[in-house]
Image (cartoon, rainbow, N blue to C red; front, side, top):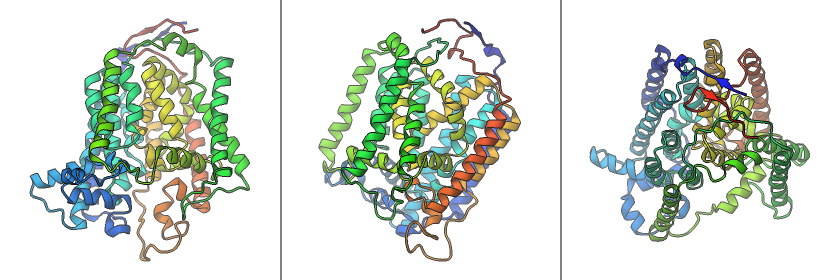
Length: 504
């Protein structure tokens, strides 16, 4: 079978709508800098943010020399170093909490505005149409973490991780291996899981495969089912046998619906793994695209991180080891039926629903770029069982871009874009005042505390879970009905006009 696609029909990604999007977001950041809400806890620094603020206020390099920074915070130390030395460069004081908060807001805004440039470059490279470029802006920037959380709780490293995630994808798509390595060296000191997701992108260079993707074979379906069963069984074992419970204040597992939660958990993992765990594809392409340079750079990346930990950190985990993290995310996925999906839609917006609707297309596109993206999606997709969606902010840009690429190949209308834009603004909750006249006291599950904690899966109350489920279902139906009028999936290769090779 052959697909013929004319690249000449792609529009240059420049439009008045794009300009208005960027200017509008910059205006919002300026307004938020002067009049935006700040988190009430920790004198505006939050919880984790207090540590990163202290690192920025002190001399970070001297602090590293004292070997008192644990491994967890060591892997997030770069933004504090940048804020500290830029403040010194401009002779800006960081003695008070309010001063540190403003410095981080400026830094976060710079990272996010830099991300708009990266999105523009990616859209140009992929030859997106103008509507899809605006849709990409909606998917990446019109959501809770960017419009609200970046200014409300600014002394976090989330927003730097967002930038580096998008930068990594751009370097990978442009096949700039050394640039990707340098980005990864910085990123592993911004976000802990970058070390694992960077390796496949480094090892496997971009390929321009041209498959017409068949349905997964029976063997592929069986392997996907075994993986899904193992993941769910591991979560149940952790909960019932090891007795792991979520932290005080978090929503605990509802054992009345744990069977339904486990079944839907299994279904989620199976549907995610099914198009990626393609035995035929792996058999034909397992060693295709791997480069010795990529292997060497990957080893160098691991050595750099391990050496930095050995020389500068306290070698303590900070109470959050990799095993504990895996166990934690498994148990959180059992709390309520599909709570991870509900949390992701609430956090990242309508593009998550588009990702689910187009997941087969997204997986097929990833296959066309080779094993680097496939392994990236497998690793980050496994982590998506985590209900605390902010942990996925470094990976979300890749999923969002691939979703938009799938839509670009089908074609979208401005009506669809505007519908998604409105939905993005609603789910971003930039308009919602989280601070109330009452101080934050009482349980996390109760208001006024819940105004903030409802935005994070493990602390979402039963009431807000029902509200977000209802909203997600309505949004799913609206987007699904609009997508019914779109074209069927097409699978052109990344830079050619004719696809003619079948993998099976």
